[in-house]
Amino acid sequence: MDPTRSMIIGDYLKENNIKPSYLRIKVMEYLLKYKNHPSADQIYKKLVVDIPTLSKTTIYNILNLFLEKKIVQPIVIEENETRYDADIRIHGHFKCEVCGTIYDLPIDISTLKVEGLDKFQVNESHIYFKGICYKCLQKNK
Amino acid sequence: MDPTRSMIIGDYLKENNIKPSYLRIKVMEYLLKYKNHPSADQIYKKLVVDIPTLSKTTIYNILNLFLEKKIVQPIVIEENETRYDADIRIHGHFKCEVCGTIYDLPIDISTLKVEGLDKFQVNESHIYFKGICYKCLQKNK
DNA sequence: GTATCTGCAAAACATTTGCAATTCT
DNA sequence: AGAATTGCAAATGTTTTGCAGATAC
Image (tube, rainbow over all chains, first blue to last red; front, side, top):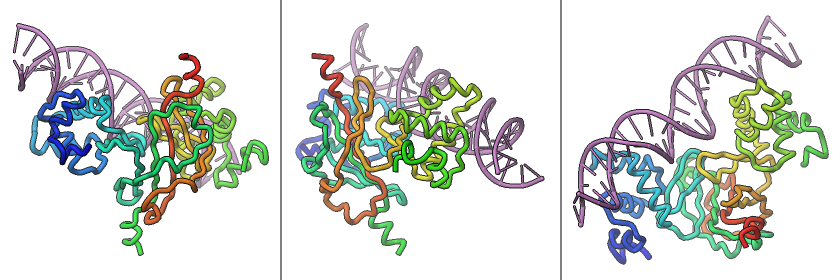
């Protein structure tokens, strides 16, 4: 289900019971285009250039709607900084403490043995790492 | 290294280059006694009963010092809610969406296969799940 | 007596809320 | 017109900051 290719974004929103308003399409477009795990503020700053009347409240409204409809997942790595990911498959993240980039990591969750987890009903799985990315490692050599 | 048994808390702090002030000992004592992954506010509310002059700023000061000295790790599961854990071994957490309890999960991280992670310098590993805990599952039957 | 610890008041920031204005059909 | 969407201004809640007062060695 890759909406950038197989269908237009409006149809993807409709499929998930979201009316495809201009701004909702713009926000989803941003998420799918940059895949950079942005904060609400990052999305706002980019879109407000072309849409000067845009309000940050609207960005929050739209992101919360997307979360509710489960077409976006929240990434909480730093306190006081929610980031958003339109890739809703289970996967890991790596945040570089030097450049701040958040990388995606494919993870085979089935290999993870967690003792006692079978007693719980798991709705969400989150795995992330922090450290220094290969690009920043190379620079400091 | 279990300071509640093998040594008194003051010595544990000293070992980590922290002067064992009365309040620092009280905060570490709380973390080791309850192991409940508290927020700064929870610690404050408990300690202020016996220490009426206590300030929340001081709790933050102390927790940030502990983080810096790496004798406490932060748990960030919900945005706007940092929680603290004096167990600094790598382990997982499960947060129940019904009762709010955060459970510890022993995790053998070596079983987790993450493609491409070897290119990064990993300083921290975080694994957590959300869902419904066995106690709440049972209640709703 | 000097350094460090503690704590107040205010600031900083991200996010939410209430409600009014706008837009869409 | 009526319902949904957008957006302003203010509130909320957590954490930080600057600085002053208290405490410890």
